[in-house]
Length: 185
Image (cartoon, rainbow, N blue to C red; front, top):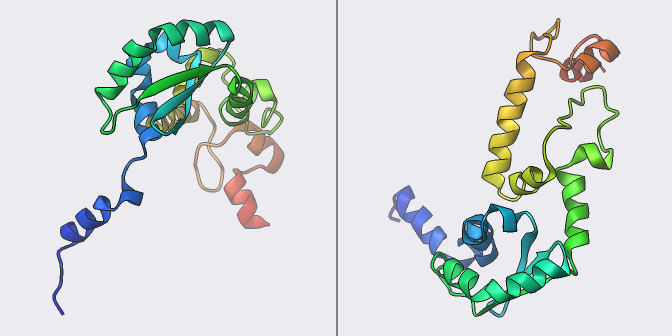
């Protein structure tokens, strides 16, 4: 029995199609660059079917306007994609459903989720367009979450047991952070 180096094993796994990056993921990564930040706030790539990209738009007016620009957008996207797209279709049909998902995931202040929790520290001043862009890419969302968490934590009091930064609501309710409170239960 021969032993293969770990690098060779990982390279062979990466070559398998199920481990390769999906086309829609790549489109999502380069979408803002291809259409611009303003257009990106009113659009969202939804799926790729038979090499045709389907994009949800915030209104029928945006769908029509972008239909006129689709060749230019297609050229910019195909320059960055390993497998070229044949066409792009724009529709406002799925926009409301996507907006609802965004509000449940990224916009807790407008949907009311979590606002009543004692540890909630909201950011009501963030613009809605910024939120939509922020949560579209996982790396950007994580970076934003990390920076926001560090900024919030600097001004929070310390838990008397573990000396970690703790939201005021948790200290008022339990006298300690939620982790220490869970350990006591």
